[in-house]
Amino acid sequence: MLLPVEKVLTSYSLVTAFAIVGVTMWISYTLSERVTQGRVHGSAIAILIGLILAYFGGLLTAGKQGIADVPMLSGMGLMGGAMLRDLAIVATAFGVRMEELREGGLMGVLSLFTGIFVSFAVGGAIAYAFGYRDAVSITTIGGGAATYIVGPVTGAGLGASSEVVALSVAAGLVKAILVMTLTPFLAKFMGLNNPRAAMIFGGLMGTNSGVMAGLAATDPKLVPYGAMTATFYTGLGCLLGPSFVFLIVKLIVPA
Amino acid sequence: MTIYGTAILSLSLLIGLSAGRLLGVLLGVDADIGGVGIAMILLIFSTDYMKRTGRLKVSTESGISFWGTIYVPVVVAMSASQNVRGALSGGVMASLAGALGVAVCFGLVALFVRLGRGKEKEGS
Image (cartoon, rainbow over the protein chains, first blue to last red):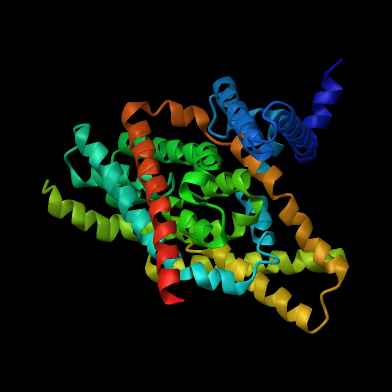
């Protein structure tokens, strides 16, 4: 009975995703208005629902793409994948004024470098505290605390063990999810309500998915500014991790 | 036509990503450095130029702005395709490395945002 329906949903997976995300948005915005009286932004609730779905998707399929590993819902992976995500995020820049970007530029660059070094330092210190004593593992786990791409790229460059690389990916994922969920609640504390602050935020946090979702849940108008700095973070992290940061770690922890 | 706008957006992204990759190659890393940021600047400049020369029609604009408005739903789909199980199964050390880094950075954002404001006031 259900088989023909399943077939349609699977072969039109992107359309299925549009429908499901639309329903999720509707539920989230209704909850936001009715239950929280607008205190929690509808998109914050939608992102949270997305993450919960992703968790169950992972439990169900033991895959790495959350709910998108369920064949019928594979369109979620396409809709939320790098291709459409980047297209949408560039489109948000339409209407941005160049002066605002220039104003926040210097602090943005400063934030970028500070964010990368601080993440490596904190992640590396935790690795040290948990008994890792070799510079390769410490740097790799530190990279994971930067983003879940910087970690494995650094690890691959330095020849870290696969166990350490997996840990660095996990650290990066934890970071992305925390930034996604906590940003709207900490926005007031951070003073995150103007383009300049969003550029600082993007530079310090750096995790693309976290920054994009966190800002979307706080104020979608800030998204292009945060994305502008965050987009440089992973690349710079991959550049500095296996080279400069590794040399410093080696000086501190001679293995 | 609407597709003109979407095409301008797509070209900006493709050129930006290629430039980001090229920058990566030049610096010796297998990663994209700032591709999306470069694409954004390209889009801002090209649409601004078209607006000034009167070539940016309303239908062209809608081919760009639609994608901007679809952004939040795309992010929801993105969050639904995250490896949440992987994050939770990384154990105490991985969680702590991620969480503590985030905590410090949240604090730094608050600090930097205020620092920036202080400087601005001095300058003016």
